[in-house]
Image 1 (tube, rainbow, N blue to C red):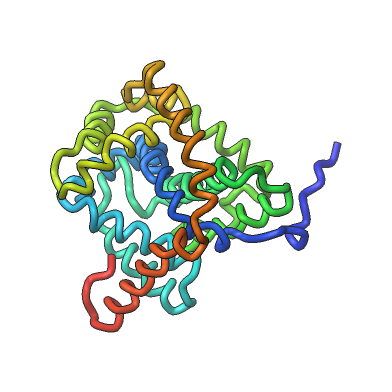
Image 2: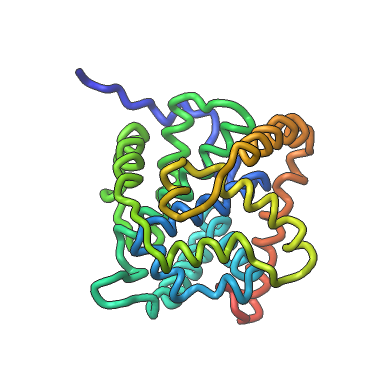
Length: 270
């Protein structure tokens, strides 16, 4: 039986049409957790990341990468890619992990692709198959801007589903990663804003994960958590849809403007 691949020419929109949506930040934590649950990624992050000492700046740099790869010029994308590669150069441990490992980078990029698609559909409804196919292919740049070759990506969105499910089965627990994941969700530093949003971010982070990944990372989940999680989405979705698009996308434009100022001034971007 031959499976027909949807024609991306029939897509209603591409990834760039929604990647700036502020609501995608509700999936940022779970995206990170899926990345951490892949042992090579998790150990590299736990042993080298500065997120716990500069959480706001690390969020800024992550968003800078995502938005530049989605909206930036070719020159900006190349500049940011070089910066990320320099940062990754020291993130290695012989026979354990390397931030330049294309297989690990593929997994990280895959979590970004899936986060965007899942959150978009939760808030705005299902994508048709052609649109889903195009958005998936648009997301390849998150990996191909670094060491991932285009042929390493599952070549269709349907094949990506298989890759995702098989990858979930390769996730495994590690005490170093579990401890770090717990620290991320119980962080007590930073300003008042971080302390206010952390409970919601923790709920969204844990709730967006599948049950097995929560178990791998030793993250708690209760019946009360599930009820709060479900109640949040019932309220959030109709409210968010009423917010003007320019306001929903404002943060992405501000991050890009900040990136361009930093590039021009020669100050640190990543």
